[in-house]
Length: 551
Image (cartoon, rainbow, N blue to C red; front, top):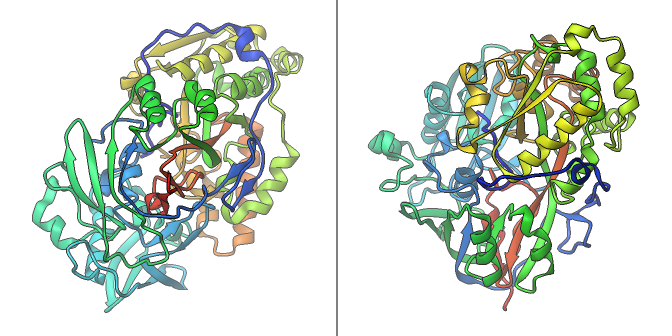
């Protein structure tokens, strides 16, 4: 379900990067996560400073372009989720500090290994004023279970039935124990929509003429195709703890870096997540607003797509990983916003296994500098015919991804691997990830990955377990451990199983490389402040925190 989410907009330009550019310098960024409203120039912050006043209307750009739909069951990418997260709510919510908390469900119990019981919040209404009921929740969950065209049905694979068991109670019965399912309800696997609205409009839900009917702090107002989606504040919203100081939001769809930068600096666009990398220095120096950076569950990495070629040899994989200048790539390609990752899973999603995974990650930590002699030693024992096989990497035609590809090719060349870099149009790149016929015998694929929720089992289930949408090579080495972990109730025992899985993936350097972990950027013009700087805008109502600055 996870698409090849590019960090920035698609730019169709040729990029010529010398090896010296990629391999020079050291990684920037770093710092600590704060929870207050201030930050130093090199620190990360969770929230930007709180707003002080109301604002009638703002313009916010969604950098990936116009969505195809705002139906949350079919939303699994930056643009639709960035808009939907303010309109449609979930049973649990994942907060900007990467925790999962009650939301439309106030509590849950797990009376036996195959049963989850949810108590629903009272006083929640849809935008038309009608109350949210257990019937709406059951319908919404069953829709995820049965709609084969939706993105989140695979998370219901262990669900046997969903039923209303009280006026404000819903019970889910499982085919087998699943301790990941409950947390997944903080993604759109747990979204709640109005049953009546969906039954009335059917497949037209999510389109410009129909929109959606949900319970969130902002309600769908208008979709002007090719121009903007407008949302207005829902004054009957149940959560009075959220500021809700902005009355109206126009979400625009600019994708050109120059146009976005110009709009931000001129004040025509009040804010955006993920402003263009090329403009970061200019934005940091501008008096027109402020650029903030926060922690994120984002990783730029390479996916092993073919184990029949040279990438089927563990020493070849380890050698290439060791030779890549991940530190230089983080500094030069990602503007200092990327730092080398110790594991395939990044710290923001360590979740229940935070202590155990942090300890293990520290034990294998690397500064990301290339170690060419070590890489050559790894290759010394590889059969000549294996080492001679060509290794192909496909990247989309974007400035950053092309530079990344050049850096990886340089590393391969330096240690004597037969390496080919293929650059393909960004608009068709997802076909390489999801269509085996398009992918063919491609050995490596670029991706920028983020998971559904801050839980390492979600990350591993998508990337390294049989059937995972980002497990293109069909790797099955942790399947048994994963099944045990999902079925395990005790957090400590489950965390131990997660560490064993991460260690196996690290030692084998598959099915993903440990690449670059990224921060999240948000630009706020002088009129507004308050948005989370942490990467949480895909499922959390971030716009509800916005307010005026009085400027």
